Amino acid sequence: MTKRTGNIIHQVSVFLLILFLIWPFLYVLSSSFKTLAELMTDPRFFPREITTRNYETLMRITPLRNFPQIVSNSLFVGVFTALATLVISCFAAYGLSRNRKLATGFIPRSLLFIYVFPTIIIVVPIYQMMVQIGLYNNLVSLIIIYTALAAPFCTWLLISFFMTVPIQLEESAQIDGAGWVTIFTRIIIPLTAPGLLTVGMYAFILSWGEYLFALVLIESSSRNTAPLGLARYTTEQYIEWGPLLAGSVVIMIPVILIFIPLAKLFIKGFIAGALKG
Amino acid sequence: MVLKKPLLRRQMLLFMPLVILVVVIFAYPLLRAVWLSFHEVSYGSGKPAEFLGFANYRSILSSDAFIASAGRTMVWAFMNLVVQLSIPVGIAMLLNKNLKGMVAARALALLPWIVPTVPVAVVTRLVLLPRLGIVSEFFNTIGFGSMHFLGNRATAMPVLVLINSWQFIPFGTLMILSALQTIPTSLYDAAKVDGCNRWKQFQYITFPYIGIMIWFVGFLAFAWNFNTFDLIQLTTQGGPGRVTETLPVMIYRHAFRTFRLGEAAAMATLAGAVMIILGILYFWKMSPKDDFNQ
Image (cartoon, rainbow over all chains, first blue to last red; front, top):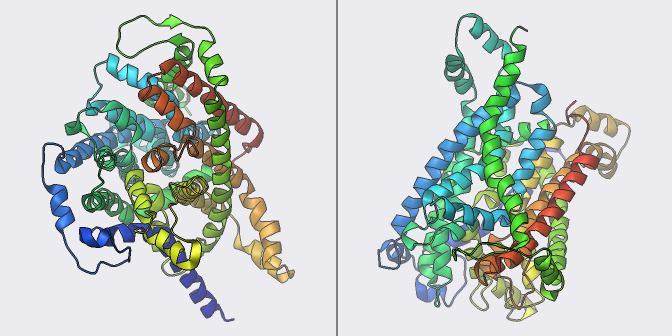
């Protein structure tokens, strides 16, 4: 077997693997353009007849359903979560990265542990806490919690980005009389922009999809986030598959559109972070 | 060198906002859950909490449903772990080659991890609908008969294991890929010269390099599985019967459906204790003394 054919076999197997991993997304996309009659009779992959009816129904505002509203709620939460996460994890990661002892080993690993920590354990106390401070049924409570969920992982990612900025650069700037604000805005932020972008994106994606805390903390349907609203459609007596699939596509698309162009950066940062421990 | 001392203080100061956030949103609620587990409380009735001692613990530990759910959670976590530790190694090795299209492939391979669970649960339910779902129809045509995968006691858990693992696999793959990339290719060249076959190369070069990472991924995966709530709640809600009711689903039901807060807190405390003990064991025993790349 020559090297060339070996490579082609390799590429084909990777292609098949990817297809196997992501076909459900392609299937939901194609099914969202099927007519209701076809959805309820024929599970084939491609629609026989293409219709946008499902999307029209989804966007129609009724007393019980207001999809544009819940999408804008999610956008609001997502944008502010991303900003808050950026500030907090940027500070934390910068502080840690400037100290080799802190930047490797125990602290980064604990940050990852927080990332996978079973949140169900803290749900009841957080619910009570939010009721007590008057943030129950308020999207701000979600911003606070999503920031807490995203920031440890984002700090973990950012440490390795910050470690690539040589400390000598800062020291010479300091000798030239630059204060820490100047150092931050003129040196650190420009040099780690890819990392910051990655982290902001990650925080947005996390808040865009979170379900458990939204379920527990948000009561009125006008304040639902997109995943919560969509999930509520599925608990109704009669599931309307058409709008439900269209809604799933609408929720998935921003995530995919934001993620794919930045994926290369994300993977680079992730791999550097994973090696740091 | 003049900078040393104030520098460390500034480093810690910058770290503080994150620490405060983690304390307020994770550490304090965790302690509060422990406190709740020893009390009788109800939502918004204004009645002061009543100290119960271990009554909540006695009541959950003597309930068969809780013991069954705890056992089920372990089975669930380990079944997932088998899938989550075997498949990412293979995928990472496939993706660890610099060929045309690999960058795009790595990006696409991450999608199951970043796409929100709600649409994933919707698709899951759609493709598994009896007679109308493309997957159940596929199994029908190859002779399994018309199956209701999520409504069948024997298949519900294995099906959810596959989907939950599918969501975790990109994360595990990335972690393992990062370990693979630290292996110098010269090692493989030398092994080939010495006449090592592929399996030997894997056994003596690849595995020792990625072993520590596999442990780490296993640890994170276990915690992830222990945490799975959305997927189960949105597909089977713990059913049929209770065959997919893991602890998070059960805790949620106790806390927000039947309003037995104290018992929910006691379950949460026990679950948290298991996770924290595992975490300590991991950091104590398995954490490498030095960095991976040193």
